[in-house]
Image (cartoon, rainbow, N blue to C red; front, side, top):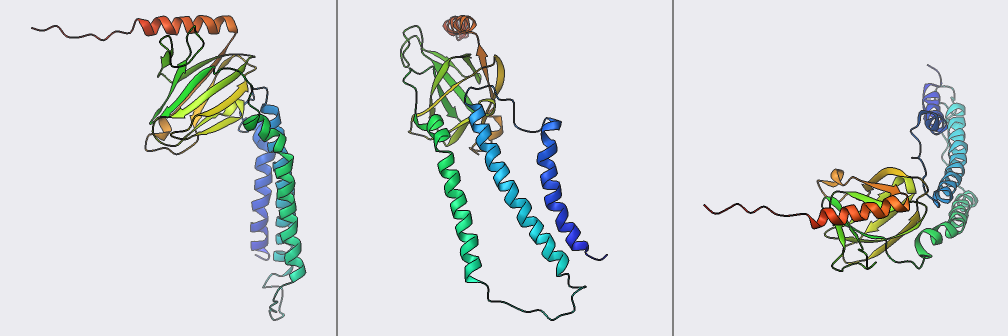
Length: 257
């Protein structure tokens, strides 16, 4: 078949673009955003996607054109080798460099809001990653961590108040992990020996996924959890319930015969 390879290579960008166009209609696109800052992250993501998508379509179209025009079965002229063009090399070096610099500057505000400008509020809870689970510690009635009234949970369920600014302290008990909340568009690498911070505001009640985004060992796949956003009164009641449940925990010792 004439121009077979030209058509074959043309299918790659065609299916690639079609995937991004139709994915949202089949609910296989980004998870539902339930956070205050998620729109900023999504807008930045879409901007970079459109920008790189345009470059992708243009370069693949040029590739298709050259495959079509210089098909070996249609051109009987002998091949001519060129040593390249210094001017062209400068152009396709400077344009990507300027584009990357523009993206770096464009996203600075989003990066600062997500990673630098931390709100001056106390920690809502502490997250500890360990092979292979997420542990959570809440401050008790005194509002301070590492005191006698702390509430410690190891069931992978994190409860937080909705429509309130949240500040998490994130640590690791062993190796590298990455605390990722897809529905809130936030992720923080968890490094042993370092206390990291993460802040966000959930805007929807309900339960959402917690995953580890860093390959941390053979049981990495088991580091799944859930974050539950509750109205303030239900959140306070849940902490009371967790505290009472913790106080009732006992260990049964077998009687001596």
